[in-house]
Length: 74
Length: 488
Image (cartoon, rainbow over the protein chains, first blue to last red):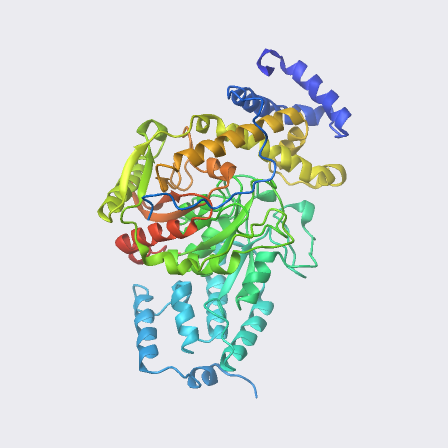
């Protein structure tokens, strides 16, 4: 994904997304934020390796349940 | 009539047995010079003395304030010491106990909270210039719960800006003042190790209770998501953040979680599952418990001292009767840290939106502004994919726990101040799945000598009792805390 993009392309994308999102990012700030943005894009590339079924829903609000005690457990 | 400390002691209804307990405890808490050290009493020891009216809450609070005066110039664990409020609360506790209204084991016991916790009328800075003058008009639920149990707020503890990161700038590790106490609850860990407090709270989004607990040689519990209210805690990530107890012993930790745990209607993610008395489980032992350990390839990049403590810990659990076997970890474990980072920073960016709009020039010198600005550009689809991966991971973890009760790992890959180059540090996966995880001291390094290492004991949702039982059995067998204390 982002690996094929140059830093200038990424900075341009950041500029457009910031404007679109209402985030006030100067050219200097975009320069400073670029390493963090590239790291997040890298993380996304990594998690794309997980095969998801179309039925897989996001864990939006975590509600965990106590399971019945399995056999063999103390 | 004014209450005096002498009056408190002389009004004791306790008999010879109580005096004997008190003398035994005081003897154990002597320093190498033979001088009694109130500041290194465990919560349990102090509670026994207070209940027996052998220790006044005022005396105890004054002793800890004196300790803070003595060591804070070196440790710097606190952002705010609530001296006057603490002494007033101690006098109230003393009066209540003298009047026969003993509330339980936290009555008259001082505590500290990470400075992310809202405290009514007391500054809550979150260690950022953005909130330097923020004074909440209500207490966080956990603060209210501790106060209702009779505990005494002694101060607010240091953290990195907005709780971002695994270090705590400004605070020094009592085991070696040149080293980091880790983070983000580094002030809490350092204050406990230095004997400034017997109990403190921490917050954990990526390992921030457990890392500092390990680095400072204390016990930290990240209970099941929803078990402890997050109401009134400054946020990193709504779906990952947890608050929990940090103490010097396992029993102290269970007592503290008894007070912290429970349903809070003001926290939408709070669980209404019944809360057990966690101290009842302590002596169950681990005989027959099925402990899973990851295969060796997961420990690439781990410090040799850490691995020695881990291997020794495995042998202790075998000796205690646990059934220890290697397990295959879920496939998604390989990428779960990346999913965690996307979730964490996307939610953080949303939380920071008003600060980025109105206070962007007030951020400190850390990378928080950079990280949340960049995080605010992450597309929603990326965030949702990360949350879908999370759901898969939770399913896989549940399957893994069909064959094991506990997953045992090192508490942290590196010694305090070390650079983490591990493939997987076994912190974030438990934030992602919401399951509970506890760290317990597991001895000390030999090269360099004397730095704490620890074990992480993790289990199924709402099975904190089993984690406490395992940790208590291990602690009783090894007694690391009793063997050595930091020389601050």
